[in-house]
Image (tube, rainbow, N blue to C red; front, side, top):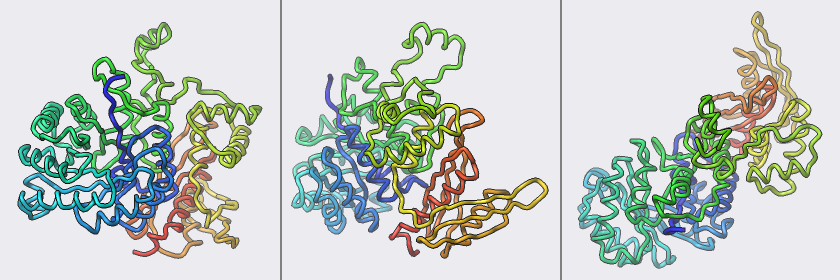
Length: 507
C-alpha cells in the first residue's frame, strides 16, 4: 500500500476564485457530495467571512458532508476565526484553517509588520481558534519565498499553540521541485515538534510545476496534498487532483504512496466541474482531457490492438471512463439506461433518473445513436436544479442572408406568460435580445460558446453563456440538437441563476 497521503480539495474555495468559476449554493453542494463520494479526506468549503453567500455555502456543506473533514479558510484575525467556526460548527469533522503571510516581501508591503509581530499574531490566533475545535490548520502564506529559519520557528510555535496541520504553500507558483523537496525536508529536520502535526503543501501552477512540486513535497515527507479538480484556481490554477492521484496510483513503484481516492470517480468529477463552471479542459489535458486515451497514429493503434499496455500506462476504466462509446438507442429500456449511468459513475436518485430518462427518450428519437458523452451532458444539465423563475415555452426564429433576423420568444415569468419580439444580428442575438425585453434590471452578456457534444450531423449542441451583473458572473448551460434552442436554454439558465442569487441582487 505504501505511506498514506491525505487529499485536501480546495475546488470550492481556491478553485472558485478562478475568474468565471463562481458557483451557486446548489452547485457547491453537488460538488461537495461528489468530493465526498470520491473519498476526499478534507474539503475546504470556502472562505466564510468573504461574503454572506460564502458563509451560507460553507454552513450548508458542513451540514451535508459526513465522511470528510470540512474546513473554512480565515485570516489570522479573531472576527475571521469566529465566522469560520460558526460556519463549520455543525460538521461531523470541523476544521479551522487560518493563515498569515511569512515572506519578507509580504510582511513588508502587505502586512507592514515585523517578523516578531507576525509570529506573535500567528501563535495567538492558533490559540484563539483552538478554543473552538481541536483540528486547526495553520498556513504560512508565500512559504516558498520565506526565510527557512523563520518558517522553522513559526511552525514550531504554532504547533505548540495547538496547530494540528502546518501548510507550506507555494502561493505564487515560484518554486521548483528540487527547492520544494529541500524546503519540506528542512522543515522535517529542523522543527523539533513537527511529528505532532501533519505537513501539508499547496502549490500554484504559475510556472507549470504545481503537480511536480506537490509530488516532490510528498516524497520529502508531506502528508497532506492540497489540490483542485481540473487544476482550477487563481491565475494559472492549482495542482490538479486527478494528476496527483493518478501519478501516485500509477507509479506506486516509485512513490510508495497511496490515497483514499476512488479513482473511478475522477472523470465524473472533472465533467461536473466543467459543466458547472463552463471552463473546459484542453483536449490534451493529462488524465481527463478528450485526447488522454485517444490514439491516432497507425503505429500506436497497432500496438494498442495487440496489447493496450503498449501505449496506455493506465486504463480509461480506472478513472471512470468507458471504452464503450455507443451503448443506447431509442429502443433501450430504463434498466439498461440506469445501469449505464451507474457504469459511468453516476449514482442518482429516482427523481433525477426520471427527468434524465425522459430527456434521453426525446433525444433518442432525434439521434441514431446515443454516446456516453450525450448521457453525461444530459446528466449534468439535470442534476443541478435551478429554480425556473423564467421558463421557456416556445420560440420562433426568422433568419436568412437577405433579411434581418427576428426572434419571437414566449416564456413564463414567475408563472405569467409573456411574449416578446426582437431583431438581432443573427438568430441567437435576436433571441437573447427578446429575452432581455422580458426582464427588468441591468446585466450584460460576458461570454458565449457553442460546442458539439459528440460527432456527426445529429450531434447535440452544448451552449455555454456567461452573464454579468454588479460584477458577479452567472454561467448557464443549454443542450439540444438545435443549436439555437441550446443557446436560448443556456441564456435562460444563466438568467435564472442570476434571479435566484439573493446576494447578487444589488451592487
